[in-house]
View 1: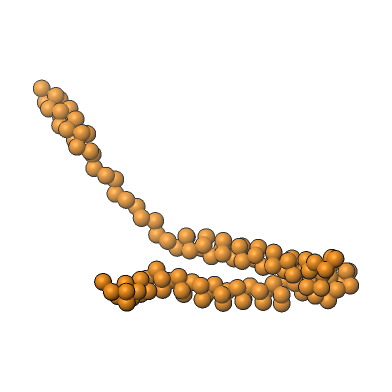
View 2: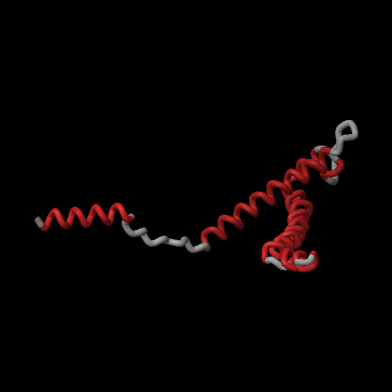
Length: 123
């Protein structure tokens, strides 16, 4: 098998394509979450705290040159992503149909013992 054929079989497997789609959607989802944190959560929840600290933006929070405001924003984004992903996975698991396996028949030993039992009952 040539190198090109091996690459084709690798690149066009469902797993690689699914992973690529997941990465692209994940990037878009990250943009949505960042916008949600910066445009909704920060103004609604953090603006009162920022106003008491005489700041307009969370990124202005600094201490000895350390911009911990950016870190706080990243932590908030992480927690929102974690909660949303938890909710999505939980909802997806509800829609999955559980596969109910039929009970397995008796093993060969059990079948043989049942035959012996039945023969003994006949006598």
